Length: 404
Image (cartoon, rainbow, N blue to C red; front, side, top):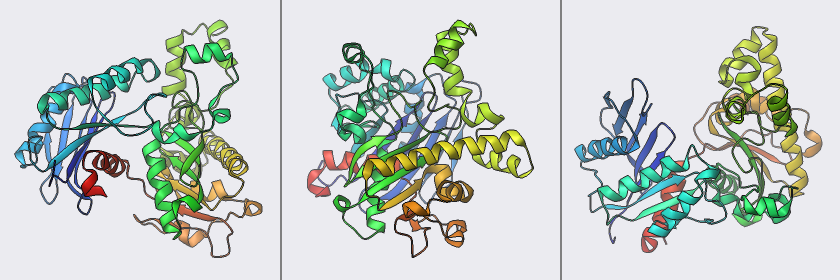
């Protein structure tokens, strides 16, 4: 693929496809887009070429294969199609790699079969990820396809942190352990945090708080993840938009035995009707804060529960790392909600943490410190860029001579 410097990043979700085309010379975005509500009412495709006008298509989109073929048509219309000689490869976000995949992997028939075998660990996501890969292969069989796994960055977690204290044979038989998610975000943000501090990645211990509708924390020691809040699935850990996070496992038994709920109903309750939404009826932190400021008790409680859980993990990860150089906020809530950042750090001066109110309130799309000069531990906001991370990992694999 000599001379090819472009990478197409595909993120095929359960009912959507997000995509970006990047030129790795300067990391320029040549096109971005989204297909949403696939297989539902009123689906649409929104495509925006760099320097061009946004285009929108509204038509019936029955499945992911059709969606990806429409994406290919839009890229073709801009001269950026999958047949372009300048395209080095396609990077695919794959949610679950289990223990089989701990780094970006060139797709082969054997790799596809193993991702298929891991579907029970991510039944909503891995099938859509597989469809994205297979459709891209069908559109251009000669184009390298690379799978980049959400779980891969967390593969360095030590065994004593990854193991659950259940019967070992049962756990092994059913692949039950801590895997972690949002790995591309945690990898990208922890590296950018080290750069912001002007230090080598190997020298820096960082706690990354990825706070979006889904939320996760990680403890990263010298560039290697040693603990993360999500587990076998993305349900464990922090309070999220619609997910409960940590829960006494016996709640599931109680709901089944006393509440009469089925396994599927409990799954829906904990993943889609819990978290902020379950506590106060809103899963958007901006709405929760607005309601709390107007005196709504349920919203205030939801915010307090969210912050309490966040601070518990923050304190725990200080203990895990022993020495912390930076606490970093990222993703939609982490990057944009000054009240969340302030509340999470408030009163933690004993840990060397503090937030400067002026710096915290200032809005910027750039990585920045929000801690005062005197703080022993830096507090930072680093916008995440999972697509760029996927593209970078893909390009390094398919074009090592250019990325060296």
